[in-house]
Image 1 (spheres, rainbow, N blue to C red):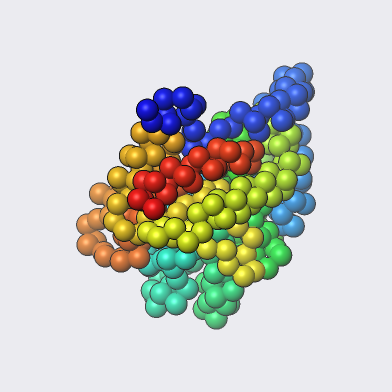
Image 2 (image 1 turned 135 degrees about the horizontal axis):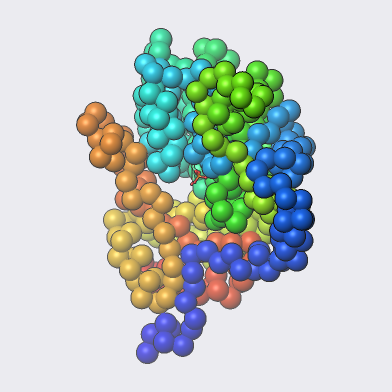
Length: 374
Ligand SMILES: Cc1ncc(COP(=O)(O)O)c(C=O)c1O
């Protein structure tokens, strides 16, 4: 008899505990917006923008429709357009590169640091040309990119750093919140994120008054005042309902991220020294907020290990099974990036959420060690 015969399945993510914790506040938020009759932008969104700006320590926070739109609008606000290049990571969700291409610019992929999965600043420096308009690091899985070196590169070249913080809301670099280090940054409130809405949502944060003003204008059909459209923009306004839900959750975020860090520490203790397994790096100066707890199976058997865990009812995910430069839309360039390709063959994200219990983690760790034959 396998353990799966008498133990409940372990999902890769369970939102229920978090939603139960804030359930009454979410219902109150819903009733408040319903009573207000104001469903798009308006006072709820403005209050959310003020609260997020204060939480982050940013001058401006602008709510938009999704993290993807946040990236597009952040880049567009800096003037990125056709013919331009943006140096970015090949190991991310598609939207990172898609935003660049959507604006008619070209994503220039440089290989990643195998410890952080983020783009390597020295390789980014070597990829800069006269057409480079932005450096676009991704704080993947909740872990900061090497911001000291990237900000230094930005200062030396005058090229703005745009942070993709979709997976790292609340994380820090040398005490400062991620998303306040570069010129402008993009956040996602996709429901599974560390701060997730009950639908799509996103946010641009910046200290740059002109860029914030441009994002506000572009998210509302290129108009500052109704029927005074100045530019071609889009409809990317944040809904009042999402803002109200996110306002209910934001005060819990630091506690939830701290709980994720405790879950990660427990995994680390349970899995330390397992041959064939590489645990996520904790780097000096960075506060990892474990959007994912992503291990690497280094003996070439990642898919078999994932299947063995699935047979025991344990959910895992592979983020990402293809590096961006390997996707059909970008593969034409014939680029090879060894570390990104190694990462996509080795990564395995284990179940994680703030209230994940120790007993379940022990089961996951035991199953993982068994699958590795250790
Ligand atoms: C790294 C990264 N960038 C951008 C996005 C896009 O965000 P959204 O799904 O809200 O459009 C996501 C998430 O989905 C992401 O993980």
